[in-house]
Amino acid sequence: MQVLLSIFITMAAAQTSLAQQNPDQQPPAYLRYPTIPPFTLLGLDGNKITRDNISDKFPTVLMYFSPGCDHCQHQVTAMMAEKEKFRKVNLVMATYQPMEELKTFYKQYKLAEFPNLIIGRDEQFFFPPYYKMTGLPNIALYDKKQKLITNISGNAEVKTILQYLGIQ
Image (cartoon, rainbow, N blue to C red; front, side, top):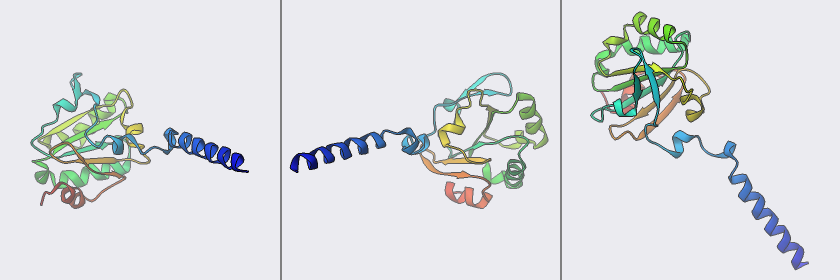
């Protein structure tokens, strides 16, 4: 009887150990590595952009979007209405959509007016699996030390974003 109990406990422990190694049960990468990830974007000018291009003087808003997404368009419109409050924020915008769509979006929404904007194409499709995205836009907020504050799937009120970043 004791042998059977011992075998059962050993099998249960092995099964629990295997279940913990299942990648679907692990937290998303952004929670396991709560700093700005090592990304590479293709900039509007054709140059590569990495996290090394982000200033450590300001907190960071990392927004993944699609130029044709209504929710993304509303998010950018709301942020543009408060663009003066984003003077001391790094704004990183990334999309997987074609460069021409990105350039059109950049011009249409006058994104050059954001002072600390980094924008580019995520050619490696890095961000969606990293954040386990379920909707667009996806907005990850980081403090000045590039540590994760929160990740938001879908639209967020600008005042909420600014509150998370400690900006009035």
